[in-house]
Length: 228
Image 1 (cartoon, one colour):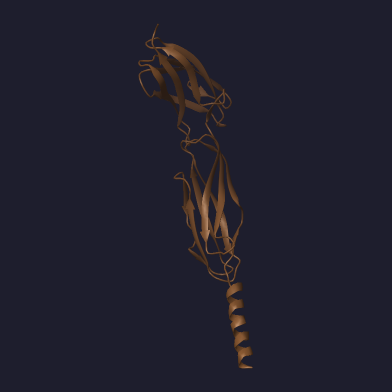
Image 2 (cartoon, one colour):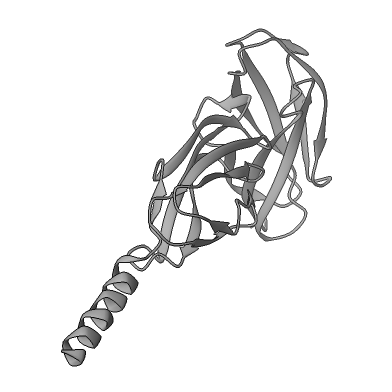
């Protein structure tokens, strides 16, 4: 009889251990930040809840320096929930962007989970060609070559062009307008005079009065060749 009783007690203890465990529940598997302008920062959030019957331990880490996380509580009691705030810095990114945030817990069924962070990064001055790079092909060293690049004001508000800047003396630009209404097109005259042979990667910058993206960067690439 005593043996049966001990077996019964042991079974209850083991059963309690097996069925006493934390369990993570997320309100969504991804955070879509929508459209952003280059250099803009946006925040999103995920809600984490412990739907198990034991304490849930949580650690969240971004996979990129462009993303920061305001950590939730390190421990969630059964039935307790908390919010993790995610912030993405779009500086240096263009187009559709997908980043990941890793969640590590002591939930035996979900020890490692990934949340996607999505964004569509735009320029306030969108190149008509669809690319923010102007390819100027082969150019003879010391000989100027000019191309026209067109950009469109997609910011939804009037823009004032306050100036420009270039990465080196090999490149210069001229702009036909100083003010742009929404959906206006700006033609930019880009002149390059190579001073060395080989591939070159230059930049010019359009300075505007836009609060979120005051500087628009355009890349200019070409190959300097020697005259025959």
